[in-house]
Image (cartoon, rainbow, N blue to C red; front, side, top):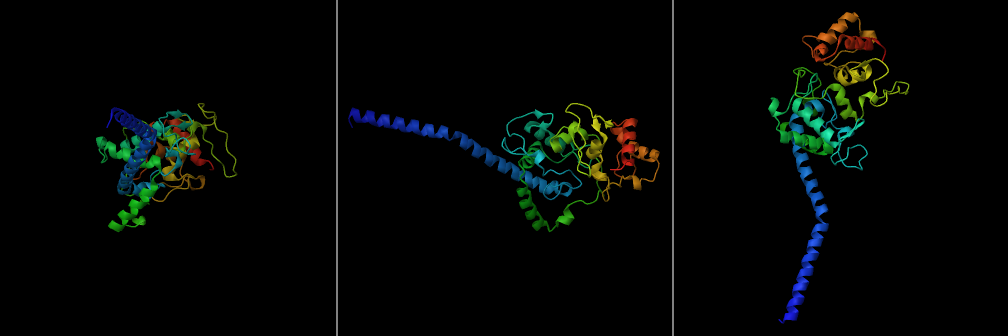
Length: 309
């Protein structure tokens, strides 16, 4: 081969190398996206198995809620900027009215790790006496924030076929054998949690009455104009703390909490004040006085349950 041919071959190889490198770099973003999608899928699969083994009894067969809060909800989704309900997938601290991806992830991880005082949610983090590692908790968070309840359904069917349990046998319909969580390592109280479960600032929540009219909400950052507990309207406080056991309409829930409607409250105000403040031994009713409510706060709750819904 003469020198001229050698030069042409070298130039051709050089162009070919440049072309291959160019194609590689042009496809790099797509390759990374596919790799991330594959990794997220694997992590969500592991989270689904953990949910099936540990969480369905309280949170429902597919996260729809039960004795525990609903997790299969648009409020917890982190699916990307174009998603109607989810927070942006990119790091985002959010606003007072709409938590961002970082905040939602931290809230879910903290709740699973630490449990929630005043509820049946225990601390699952192994550093606090639970059985889940930080990695496993992260897998559960990925499952929830990606909304992969199809995987829960799939693995749930597999598990039920192996164990022979039916859905009716798996989901708790009574609080028998459960106990409320006391102090924990979490920094979110029931009021702060509203922001993440509904994607709104609790100070701006509008409750819709039976006639369809919505009560005006306080502007963001301002105290409600009516009676409030810890800066939140009394009815919102009830929904955040009491509805889990007594029902969102105050009609009571079987084996959890009694109805709190005027026509069935036959005892004196002092009786209900003492019950809220000190709890009731032998029941799941916690002592709210020990959880930071003042006597004035408790009296507002007594007045609230005496009122018509």
